[in-house]
Length: 135
Ligand SMILES: NC(=O)c1ccc[n+]([C@@H]2O[C@H](COP(=O)([O-])OP(=O)(O)OC[C@H]3O[C@@H](n4cnc5c(N)ncnc54)[C@H](OP(=O)(O)O)[C@@H]3O)[C@@H](O)[C@H]2O)c1
Image 1: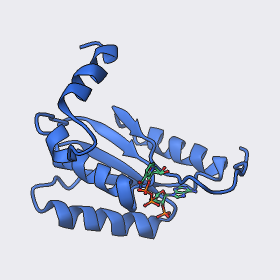
Image 2: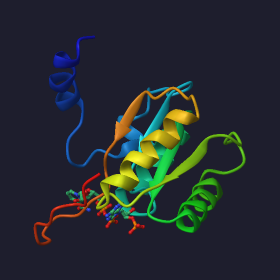
Image 3: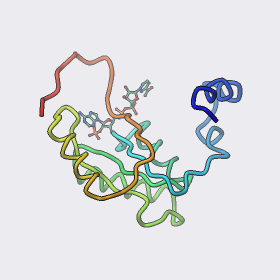
Image 4: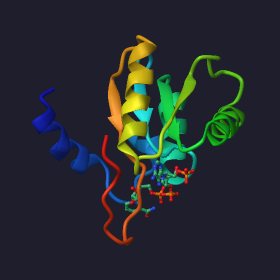
């Protein structure tokens, strides 16, 4: 199916009350890997969990390695024992610092893994506009 045709059929089936379980019911993400930024909490955490629940592998990003490890532990606890040992890995980066973003991208590339999608979730709104550091 062409990407341009997906939205109308999606909108015909789902609305703001649809759950992720309903949306993903017939989806199989086996063999796919995604990067989810800001997966330590909130929507990013849940997105990482649902991708893994559907068989995908997830590289999460966090601002600290300790927080990333805690997050993966929590994800594994919530998902149970059927999740493969290599389902999750992590990258460390603060997205306000482009040098860290570049280093994280290089770290990912050095692992020679496929990448099927990016879920760029990290962030917040309503805060003052600020320029990030440059590389
Ligand atoms: N929740 C909503 O109703 C809603 C509605 C519309 C849009 N959104 C958008 O959806 C996204 C997630 O929302 P949420 O409510 O789940 O947010 P959240 O619970 O506040 O989580 C934000 C995530 O972003 C990470 N993060 C924050 N600043 C970062 C930085 N400088 N570098 C790297 N990571 C950073 C946090 O990591 P740490 O653990 O390091 O803090 C955390 O994992 C945001 O972009 C938000 O604007 C949310």
